[in-house]
Length: 371
Ligand SMILES: [Zn+2]
Ligand SMILES: [Zn+2]
Image (cartoon, rainbow, N blue to C red; front, side):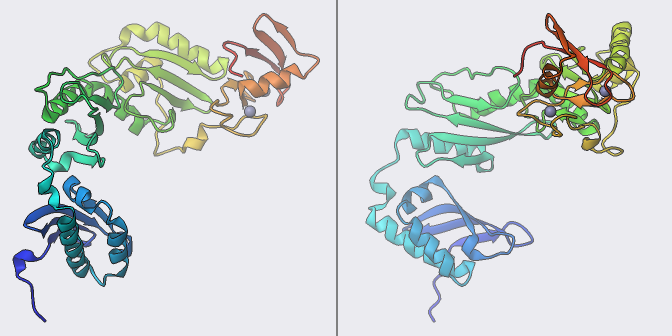
């Protein structure tokens, strides 16, 4: 068997110990193309994923089914790569190679920009090269994703940048601005929000956050469990995360009222040099239940009428005031229940009736009718 010269063979290097990730170049028609091969956990080649540079994607456009077929039938990664090289040779010859249609300025300058930035920061690029996703890491090690949509007017019109931020963001743009500048502008915005995210990360890791269930980086609100059916909702100012945030309590009056009183009488103790969580503990004179001792379900009691926790997006935020009962209900469920009782009466926006559980008096305030 005649061996091909080494330089003609695709050059792929394993990137991890388990042999699932390969990175390298494939050469055809005197051109090198970047390629990555990611094997599934069972290392079966049939289910491998190929990540190609955009040039390679362009050349292989129309050959996808052939590539997939070869992937199914090849004995191993080495023989597949040789097959891929053959396909690539054929594709390049038949399309008269990408040399024949030189990449417009638009593409070449973009590729140069991304090269300067580093290919490792590129998460995704579409076939038209109009949408780019960049990966960013802030100085606290948090990952962020920037989606840049270039639009037809690029570089004369500013691209559209999407980042998950709690503040408005727009890039300052001139036709000379490049991808690296966008990256730097986003990065400095991320750094300006470091305090805000540090504060919320501490709350997310040390307390039981009941809402939002999966907070995004733009979420300024957290509802934190204080105890069974008692919680505090805080809404932070992203620019001043160490200031006293807006606070609302949720729970039965006999539990919530003392907390409100503490907040009012201790508010002067708020110390912007101490973290938000510590401030809340000091001022409310409480310890938040920690994740190590309790489960989330300890704080998320189902509605006593419909026996569910979520009703559409609502949670059971109406709690019976009787300390021995303290059964939570959804507003909508309690409204229907009280409406159906002949003994209930309504005065302005308050309905007075009996708790379905303990028959003690219960009131329902119709604030903004959520149903
Ligand atoms: Zn309910
Ligand atoms: Zn009750």
